Structure formats: C-alpha cells, structure tokens
Length: 345
Ligand code: NAD
Ligand code: ZN
Ligand code: ZN
Image 1 (cartoon, rainbow, N blue to C red):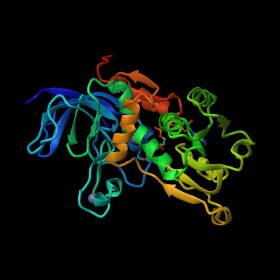
Image 2 (image 1 turned 90 degrees about the vertical axis):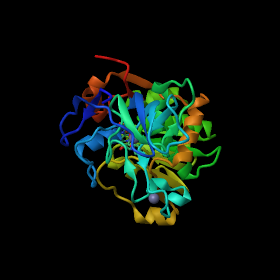
Image 3 (image 1 turned 135 degrees about the vertical axis):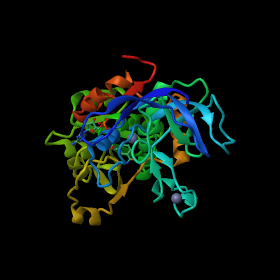
Image 4 (image 1 turned 120 degrees about the vertical axis):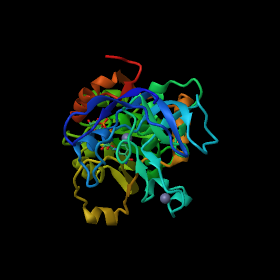
C-alpha cells in the first residue's frame, strides 16, 4: 500500500465533484504511474460531468485530460520510460494499436480507444495511471503549469488549424477565444496565417487582440459576418470553430471563403443549420477534428517548449475544481484554468 491521494470524483452526472482520498493506484503491464503536478481544466471536462454527450462517461470517474507530471513507477514491460521522466496525459489514454486507423496515424479515430477522464480515470488527482505508449514526452525542467493546457487545448487547436489546410499568408477565422481559441491564435500566427478572432465576450476579444489577432469581432454584432468578409477580402480560407454554441457553427458558414474549409472542434450538444446551396456552390468543406495523434501532440508541445506559444493560465488548488467548472460554464475563465497540485487550500 503506497498511501492515499487526493482526487476529484464524479459519482453521478450533474452534481459537484467530491474531493476524496483514494488509494494510489499501481501501474499494470505497459502502464506508468504519474505524479500529477498540474492539470488543465478543459470545457470537455464540464461536458463530461454534465453528461452533455450521446455517449456518457463511465461512473464513477475522475475527470481531467491535461495532466502534466512525472513518472514515479513503471509497470512490467515498459522500457522507454523511467522514474523521473516528465510526461503528459492527454485525452487519448490508449487505443488498440492495430486497426486501420491506428496503423495509419489516426489512432484518435480508433473504435477501441479509451479516453482519460471519461472512460478511464483522468488527472484531477495527485496521481494517475497512463499507458506508456500514449503519454506525451515533456522537456526536462519544464513548466508543468504552462504546458498542461497544451496537452488538449494546444494540440487540438494546432491540429484543427492544419485540418483547414489554410496556407501561410491566408486567413483563418477562429470562433471561440477560450482555452482552445487563445492558443489557436498563437499557433496560427506561428504558422504564418492572418488571424480573425470571434467571441461574444469583449474581454476575450481584448485577449485575442493582445495575442496578435488582426481582426476581432463580437459574434453578437449584427454586422459580424459582413465585417469578417470585408476585412479578409471575401472570407477566411480556414475557419476553426471552438465556440461552445451551435449558432457559432452556422455563423462559420458566413465567414468562410469560396473553396474554404471549416474545421469543427467545439462540442456543444445539439445540431446546426447548414445552407445546402452555399456549401455546394461555394465548394465548402465541413470537417470535424478531434484532438491530434501522438505526432501532432509532440509538435504542439515542441512549439510551446520553443516559446512560440504560451498558455495564459489561472492556477487553482484542486479543492476549487467545482468553482472552476462553474466559471467555465458561464464563460468566466480567460485563457485556461489549471489545477496546480502543489497548492493546498
Ligand atoms: P472555453 O469555455 O474555454 O471557451 C469557449 C469560448 O467560446 C468562450 O470564450 C466563449 O465566450 C465562446 N463562445 C460562446 N458562444 C460563442 C459564440 N456564439 N460565438 C463565438 N464564441 C462563443 O472552452 P474550451 O476548453 O476552449 O473548449 C471549447 C469546446 O471545444 C468545448 O465544447 C470542448 O468540449 C471542445 N473540445 C473539443 C476538442 C476536440 O478534439 N474536438 C478538444 C478539446 C475541447
Ligand atoms: Zn480537452
Ligand atoms: Zn485502433
């Protein structure tokens, strides 16, 4: 018995997480035990605890899938990791490794994947179990709090931008400037794109401007779509939708240029209206995008480690996780809230 750890546990959907002391788990074959130093709080964690999606999480569970920490124990057969290695635990906890998706670099589409903080326990805890083959490698002496948001918000934004196929010098419109969107602006700038930012909150738009967005537009303005089309000379070649609102998905169709691609990343429950005539005659591509594979994750981390992208974080102790989720629900977090496991309150 290794002792106990603090963990935030969902026993039922739609009620606050309970902070408990649980036994520290032991890694099985192919697994590692990670001492979590910091865990970002993604809007997906809120969808999970609210039970927003058609597939429900397995109860009880510990949410969290932006866990940055250090390996403290390796399970049988793990040869490439050792105690002391800094690693990240992301949404893709593990996958089958041999299906058509896994063998072609699309392990994020594996039908047998398991997801951290959803179908297996996640990282809102002092320790978490990871599959050694799926952890992100982090640089030595890294800033765990700054890198935690890269493990989901960062990689998802980076991949979602690439999925628009916008080229350097072209425009990307980023709808939703929250945890994902504020990183997306920075990835897009680093990738040579012009950036238009759209949100419903003036403070998020001010953040977007400070991060280098050339155009900022409030989605609630009557002229929002016209403003974007005019400033981009006919619409953005790429549109990335991270907003937690179905109406933002319909709006995206009014921002995209002919022949452009809309990368759909936000996951509000619901549906959105799609004007068939516009999509067909303008040859618009609508493309879903889900996190990123392990190579995408390595690249997203590398760009942050290089200093090209930096999450704006607000740290909280684990004990305040329910207050963080309440603020996230009303759009009250600027950048990313991160649970700093060294804070005791
Ligand atoms: P967040 O709460 O930090 O940010 C959401 C932002 O959307 C906020 O700034 C909010 O003001 C803005 N917004 C709300 N309504 C809007 C509208 N009508 N137009 C423009 N902006 C609007 O959330 P987050 O952590 O960045 O996550 C965003 C979404 O992405 C969530 O639904 C989450 O589940 C999803 N997500 C998807 C993936 C994926 O792989 N596809 C990965 C991570 C998160
Ligand atoms: Zn996430
Ligand atoms: Zn598979």
